[in-house]
Amino acid sequence: MNDSAPGAVASDRAAAAAERARVLAQALPFLRRYAGATIVVKYGGHAMGEEVLAEQFGGDIALLKQVGINPVVVHGGGPQINAMLKRLAIQSTFVDGLRVTDEAMVEVVEMVLAGTVNKQVASLITRAGALAVGICGKDGGMIRARKLTRVKRDPDSNIERVLDLGFVGEPVGIDVRVIHALTGGGLVPVIAPVGIGDEGQTYNINADTVAAAVAGALHATRLIMLTDVPGVLDNAKHLIPDLTLAQVQQGIDDGTITGGMIPKVENCVEAVKQGVKGAVILDGRVPHACLLELFTEGGTGTIIHR
Image 1 (cartoon, rainbow, N blue to C red):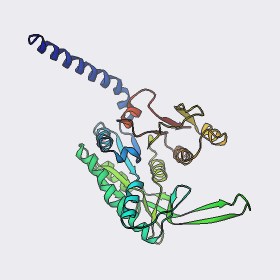
Image 2 (cartoon, rainbow, N blue to C red):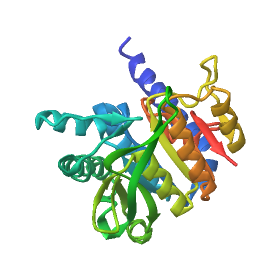
Image 3 (tube, one colour):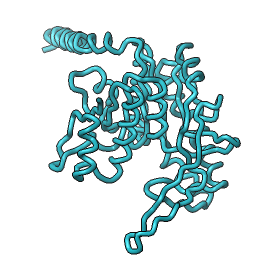
Image 4 (cartoon, rainbow, N blue to C red):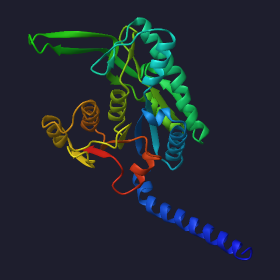
């Protein structure tokens, strides 16, 4: 029994080596396809909140950089903001999924997003072997923003009223020079979704919206939206792997695409219209979701393209 143990170990090692070689051989065409490409990744949800997934994410982004791809990360931080507001006894209200942000709250949002969370995400990537730099949209005037307004119609009177969301903004322009300076210097930009207005106001911006705007401005090869669902699902709850812009609109019109998925697909559509070759919505709870999407045939989520 002891005599056969070394042979069994050698056999196991050979099998493991063969498996690694097979995986590398399958990934090689995709590595060539994306060499030098810019990939924008929106990072948030459970993938950010769970320690093991967070470590894997940092490793995946570092790997992308190491194989010649230029990843750009845009992150959210809703749960972390909620936790800090609770500690400070500041009450939050939401309108259509957007946090109403007054002057006191926007200071907390900036502190959490551009401070704590931003540096944590950059640190994950740096520890995994790629140099990441945390920045926010105010740095270098990178994300120029304006106040976001929402109009709500009363179902009874049919009267529309404008909702004041405070310091919630939307991007009106992305200055890509800071991003290019970082990626050209071998660094990974990690961007907090905080923008700056014409008068120097700080605006809290939805991370999906920022990721789409950044991807469009960079003419990225891919925009990857990490979510807490497998992708866009049909009425039978099966994954739809592929959607054109026209099919997205049809899905919204016929009720296939509903709820919180609507703004996600709309951001993806806007990115594609601005020149992104494909925008993908996929499940960030799946280990190594980004690598599986980029380096396997068919990917794992829903890709939206022209």
